[in-house]
Image 1 (spheres, rainbow, N blue to C red):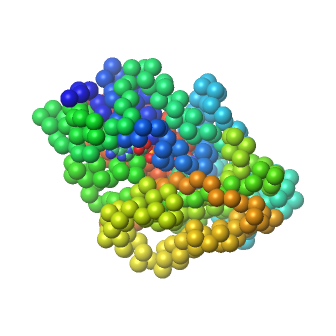
Image 2 (cartoon, rainbow, N blue to C red):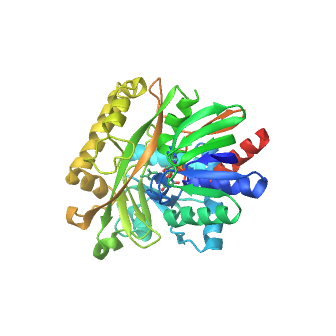
Image 3 (cartoon, helix red, strand yellow):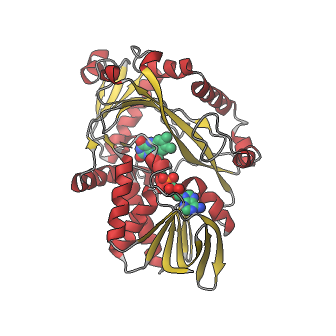
Length: 400
Ligand SMILES: Cc1cc2nc3c(=O)[nH]c(=O)nc-3n(C[C@H](O)[C@H](O)[C@H](O)COP(=O)(O)OP(=O)(O)OC[C@H]3O[C@@H](n4cnc5c(N)ncnc54)[C@H](O)[C@@H]3O)c2cc1C
């Protein structure tokens, strides 16, 4: 049996950031338990790798605060640790009057959140930034950047180990129980006794939280995001990052173009219901997970909205019919052709849904006297990981 002061379940960017800040700010004996043998196997290594400065989020919200601070801190961290980070800027493109009106709202948010921006009101101005993008107006945010997310996770892991944190990879936490002084964790490699617990298990955070009676009014619903890569000979179609104007009703940003830190141009992600929490291919099915989703009352209520059914149908089509994905890509860059796109990786978002059928859009964590359960480390969770992890570390340190 292993004994530590704190167990952090989940070695993604959030769990490791909590570990980093606990190691820096306390003398606690901290362990990170990660079920995979390799890091960055799930959300933290399967994303767009974009640092989103806070123009997309309402002023004074935690999301805006963490994203704005996170963007600046991540750039400094990448520079200090030699992690690829390209400060390319992002162009958010509007195609019609209603989207253009939304750009004005984004500009107001950018202003309030102290994010640099420029509004472009002609096709000529758009093409001065992105020669192949098409739209009637755009918001240009120069602070957006593209980071190698997997290298970032590995660097965090290296740093925390050097600071004395024990990192156990290949240790899946299968059961959490209350013990006389803290928690007893059953893992795939033996039992751990700890005084404090941080649940940062991403796609599985709700399952673990429910074992100790936390967050029972929520469930993670997995939404897969699939990417295509623009073949290298056509990568000039996107120089930086080109996004559609986001729909404020939806938590996902829509199919966009990202020039990654390694120079590849990827298009995506869509947002389709995954038939399993780790069902990365559109033919993968995990019957237990799927049953859990389909019988969840929150999911059924979510699907009772006509708008959500329409969105779900469109996204499903983009997953199974390449021409639909291409059409969504052509909305921003009409010159892209189906043969320019080849299938790349996919990520799965741990989207928290409440029993009343709401998609939880803000970061959510639940505190207990001796635990913090991070139930919704929603996008831009990668951008926000340094300040968010620091915040959770502070919350936990106060309990000790
Ligand atoms: C397709 C996609 C695109 C995105 N794009 C962006 C973007 O461009 N910018 C941005 O800021 N954010 C983006 N995000 C969001 C961002 O990736 C997440 O918010 C962030 O990675 C969450 O990190 P995490 O550490 O909470 O989760 P994870 O990375 O999923 O880490 C959780 C870890 O817990 C481990 N684990 C789970 N269960 C157990 C268990 N029982 N025992 C032990 N270990 C366990 C898992 O193996 C995993 O390593 C995107 C997400 C997706 C899916």
